[in-house]
Length: 104
Length: 122
Image (cartoon, rainbow over all chains, first blue to last red; front, top):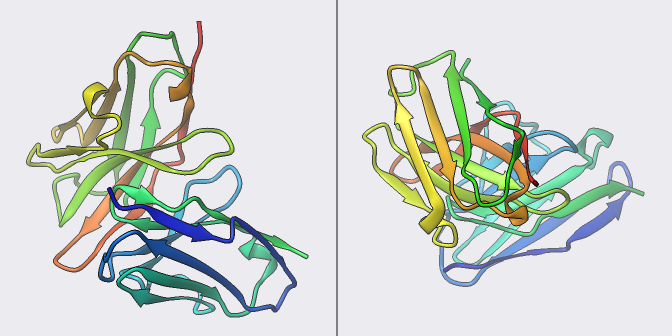
């Protein structure tokens, strides 16, 4: 089975900061990598699919990059409404452990 | 706009079978290049994919749960269902249904239900 290692598990940043989360696959997964945002008490929401494609309606401050085994998710300017836990996913089976993003 | 809604008992006794249904509204479960999945999340923990079904009836399951899981679809009711047998406290979680959007180069869960909490306890 493919393992997804996501880091960090949590981070604290100020409004306006650039935030970066990484996800590493245990083997080459090409660009089959998605990113989701989950706010407390809510279902996850798809933000990025195929490593770098922005889902319709998602703000452009969110972006993704990478291929093969190493992937990056970036929030270019952190906003208060971005407080959430973010998950990477190698579809459909494997999710990363999640990164909880908080405001400093 | 397609929406998903989970339904089923919130409390299941140990060793019994957990049964949930996801109702699809706002569109046909049979249309488009989609599959239908169940995902769960224990309190304070991460997401675990349970399995999926295509409207053809073809299924795939998480190997760690495969021996206990059955996912079925009823296109006439625009619903798909989950059965998880021999449950224990470890199966206590929020259960989500989700639509998988799949084509030649893409595979992602683009629509999710709100989730339903299932507790396994006597």
